[in-house]
Length: 160
Ligand SMILES: [Cu+2]
Image 1 (cartoon, helix red, strand yellow):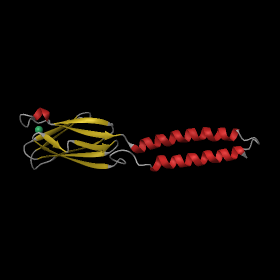
Image 2: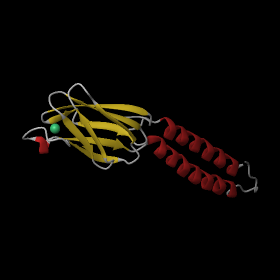
Image 3: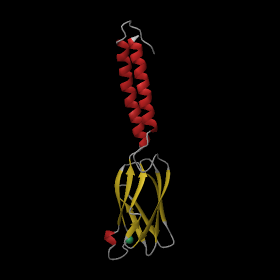
Image 4: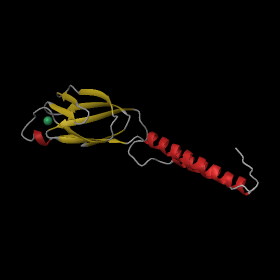
C-alpha cells in the first residue's frame, strides 16, 4: 500500500514537472524555430538595428537595404556576403544552425569609417531542443524513482 502510494506520488510529480517543462515560457527573444525575415538597413556607417536576434534552427532570410551608398554585409561564422545598392536590396537565405553571437561587417568600402561599420546577429539556442532534453532527463529520473518506490512496497506489489 505504501509502495503504491509512493509510486502514485512519483507519477503525479513527474507529470507536473513534464507539464512545466513543456509549457513554461522560454526566457529568450524568440519562442521556436521557423521562417524568419531579418531586415537590416545600412547607411554610413551603421546597421539598423545594430543587433539582430533569431533562434537556432530558424530559416533566416537576411535582407540588406542600402539607404545612401552601396554597402555590403559579411556575416561571420556563416560565410554569407551580401551587397546592396540604394533601391536594390541584397538577400540570402540560410539556416541558423549554430548558436552564438556573430559579427556583421560591411564588405564594400563605403567611406572613411567603413572599417567601423559593424553589427551583430545573435542566434539563441533552440528551445524545443532543450525542452526535449529536459523531458528525456525527467523520464529517466522518474523511471528510477518509480521503480525505487515499487521496491519499498512491503507486500511486494507493483503497479504499472
Ligand atoms: Cu559600408
